[in-house]
Length: 252
Image (cartoon, rainbow, N blue to C red):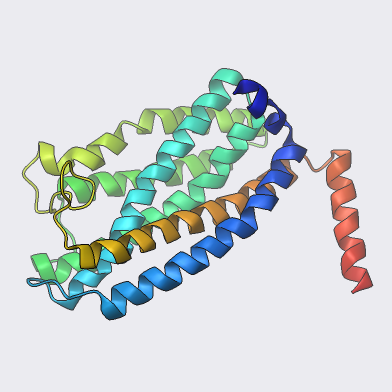
């Protein structure tokens, strides 16, 4: 396994690999989201209690799940960077942070919009909501540290430490509805046994969720490639790549 992964420690190899994966992620995201969102918004049945307002579920739940998933990916990258001193792992963590912050913001905004008709208020200091807000602050802190130092190695190390300290918040978000008496409803999709949701609602959700996963992967690929170029701007292969792209544009 390590022999297979070893070539991808080379920035040039990883840059081109991300470039090859990008069209696939983009195409799958467009296909899955087109099917999932149309199915969810136009054809999925309304909830018997919440009516059509429940349809925000198809955006809120994927955004909330991905906000945690991206943070875990960022924590793994940060751990790899600190322990094995892999510069590309640090670049990966830096690429993930803004994407995670955006999806956390979407989860908070859609959660507030969903909570208003259900709870009668836009915000309450519920355990799930508060811990999700803390997650946003962690993302913003990591982003600030990545940009606080001119030395990218020092910046990555500081951001990585904060990321690893903050990872304890992820299980708190996940299990807050079980550990404390909260207004937020429990799990409907990921709980053990049969999900507490009709299959007519479950299938469009799965398309939406996988579509957002592919969208996140595509965005991270774009940001990762940008990070690699920025951190290796003096390398000959980057200069050749830039010169080739400039010449291609001039010929057009």
